[in-house]
Amino acid sequence: MSTFDDRNTLEDILGSIAFTQGYPDYWSEDEINRYPRLTGAFLEIHERISDKISRTRNRIRASWFAIARDQVNEAERLYLAGKIDEGKDLLFRASDQLQQGNKAHRRRTTFVIGEGGLDVQRAKDTKAERDW
Image 1 (cartoon, rainbow, N blue to C red):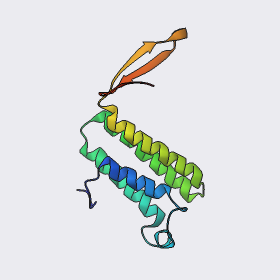
Image 2: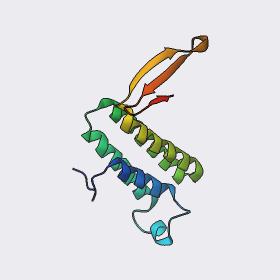
Image 3: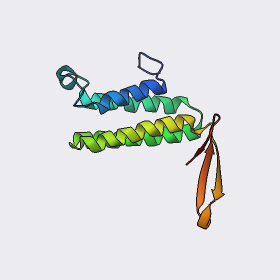
């Protein structure tokens, strides 16, 4: 059972990531110096994603979310090592991974041989066709 005061939607998870990406530029002195601080913010993201993974029956979505969780864990290590810009980039990629993973189970993917024998992956969303 989750300990969150919300439904733990994708938007809630992305909001937690956006809040953490704002460190230290957009955090007030109070936010920087009080619990849960930075490690607590990362722990919340980790718990939110883990909660989503545990409640989904879709293996594809769970896989995408697990990759995002690993990226968040690596971003935390970078933040704590003082490599904040690299950590922010990794959090951005984790956000993108979550958004793509949330749609992944709705796509039909095919592979087409392109010019020079290269594989060109094409994905069809339910709304529109998209090139990858």
